[in-house]
Image 1 (cartoon, rainbow, N blue to C red):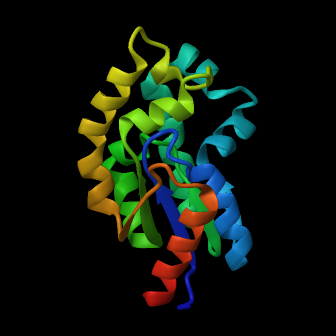
Image 2 (image 1 turned 180 degrees about the vertical axis):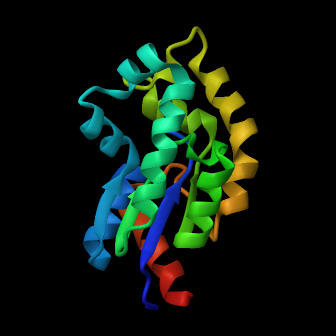
Amino acid sequence: MQRIENIFLVGPMGVGKSTIGKQLAAKIGLEFRDSDFEIQKRTGVDIPTIFEFEGEAGFRKREQAILDELTQQRGVVLSTGGGVILDATSRQHLTARGVVFYLHCSPEQQFARTQKDRSRPLLQTENPLAKLQELMAQRDPLYRQVADYIISTEKRNAAAVTKDIIQQLSEG
């Protein structure tokens, strides 16, 4: 396998970025980082609370600053928040500072994985599936723009996806 300094996982909520990122980092000997976790750790509150007090714009500003910092580290697998690619500067940091994997699945699969999760502010709506479909329509082109590789997580477990990522890295 080629020497990889950084691997960045992008994709919508519920696609498995954090779970897969942890497994991948452990298998290839890199440190795992999660941008959402870092924001929560530094603010001392959860993401829904940040949304409540600062709105989505306030959260995105924090997310952009954390992403800039984390992508400058070396030897990390970084799981990013689903909306991180909305910011042009963040997209540039991702593509310039590491190998980007877009983890993809259908909005229906995302809904199945997130429907009981109350910690996702964008899904606290009358029709969460419609919101997931809307977000996918808006964000999919941006995920594809930054991606070096696209990997499906549709009806697949984290171990299988992790194995696919390692295979892609080894084929270079």
